[in-house]
Length: 545
Image (cartoon, rainbow, N blue to C red; front, side):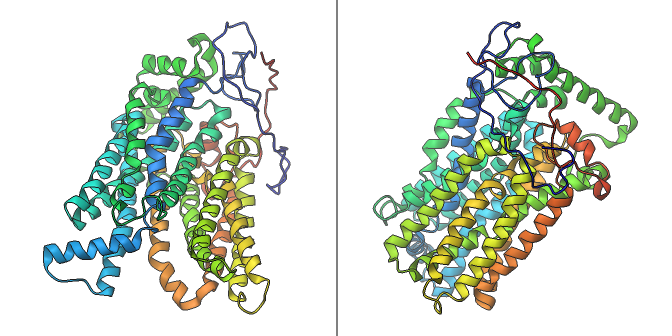
């Protein structure tokens, strides 16, 4: 990309081909190294670290044990809803004497669904504290323990005939999910070499999308979506978390956390060498960058010793963090306020209008989930090849057009014979463009906009915005839909268009840039002049073995 590219959309998409880094001698250049953009460790060291086994294990454990349960608990609850409502009515009758009316039962069901979001918002706000107090790895372990506790509650609630235990389980797994979305992207991007930061950042939303699809599939009536096995269905994420939990002890702690937050330089260097599978002398660039960041933090603290540690209040007051915080919260909330859940809600009626029966409609909805998962897999190389800014702009603008087309097609679906097919195409195209940018990037962009000190709080506030946006849509969409019907998609389109305008003027391209450089770029708030592209300063030639 050229720094003179002012429209922010013209881009060279170079998708890097990555291989495992070897632990060869210091004089060997490029054996087993990845071919990609210039990254930390490229100058002086003669080699760029790649996908080492420990990075792969960290990605797999966090995806399986922490991220996948988030998506699973989002996707699993709708299919067995009628069966669980019967259980709720029987439980209330057994413990409190008397059946619930239809309205009372719907209120109780709404509480069961929404308490997951309340737990998510609470867990998000705890993410920054946990990441600094018990470490990134410790916080990952905490999410897995909470998942196992919640899964045990789901299994026990049917045996004890306790709707209260069902509510508590949803709250606990919601808290764990909020903690996961706050900590997992930060942990993985801090482990990653700079040229793999985007790919590892996508692991969390990829795990969530796998979980959503798994929950929808497992809830089919020929799987576990029955009156005898619904409690096992709700707890099915437990074994996945258990497998992840058994591997947590082998995970590395974030070297940046150890180096810059805890001040444990020697341990940080050891962990970095273990992750990269390279001796310390081969890591001169990364170590130099961390030592410079540590020196800058020490100087800043010497100038303002009264500031102390980074808290939510300090982050909210800091003028240099206004723009990063706005961008992170806007992207996270905008992900939900773009109407993705409303699109899936309406997809059932769209498929039925197109002539599909109930069973076919159920599988068509699963097909949408498969499209969402496929685009998440595609995003793994694209975020590194095309950059975050370009993908976000293309995703938001395309989603805006799809929402307008979807709203219009649903409004005229009964008057024009071919309009149902336009509506189906709009749903599928929306899911596709959403998954390329708006779906994965907001989860990890905070780790690239904030420096290490304020990063946990910044990402926690961003995660809170995501869960808050989800809560707002869940509470308001039924009312909006009852008043204006399919025109509600025009509301989502307007919000998405506003987000695109904000990104156009203020979101810098973070691909290939050190977080300190990005943070400095945004220090002036709305007066900042963001760079829309990255021109590598060093060309690296590698010979693959």
